[in-house]
Length: 292
Image 1 (cartoon, helix red, strand yellow):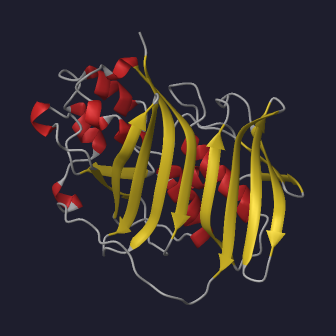
Image 2 (cartoon, one colour):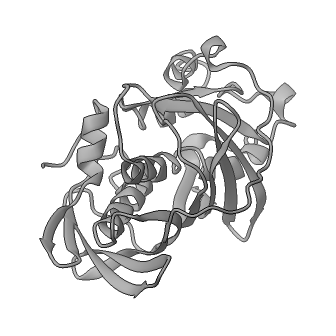
Image 3 (cartoon, one colour):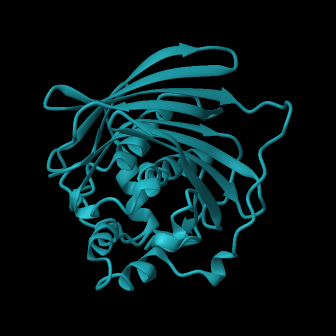
């Protein structure tokens, strides 16, 4: 498969995240060509998880991953993924994945897999928010901002794709009267109804979880700068998978930022299905700079 300039369908996304096997625990992946000319972090997360999944038994399901972005990825060159089989126990398997370009690691990830087992069950509650059918998509909201907020309009156009649908609860254009809104709630789903395995769902969720997460650290300061001057770069990403989900049905991504300091910001997210079941929790820290 060649590099993609745009993701037009869920099959495009599946193909992007599914790696070519070169040898035992060695894989190759292609890239989504992004407007910012660096590899999208969610792509590397999903591909690294695909590599790890290809190295474990089918009865082992991912329950957590922790990744570090080390160097910007070059969208014009394929990425090589090397998996180290750290441990296979009676219930758990641990893998370490390195994503490599030009002989250097651009990303490393540790992931843990577990057999399905019974145990205690509890969770946080999903917040009450408007129904997704009553909301505009992010694209529709962005089009309304072309004249009033061209900086935000350009940012939103740069992430355009057709496999996923996002419906933000809070308006994209944060004005002064919305300055106390620090939490972002975004409904999301795949646009097509399609049968997916749980590993495939995990990989697509990992890809999707990189949307909007780091921006949550910017929202408390959104009236202080122009988005065209904002530089963001992911430093790390952690994710936990709690329950199965139909990702072609609506899920709510609840995002906020517990802290920002020393030119770094942290995003924290929880993903619920439409019935209020907690599917996944996500944390990310990134570099945030205002360019002169």
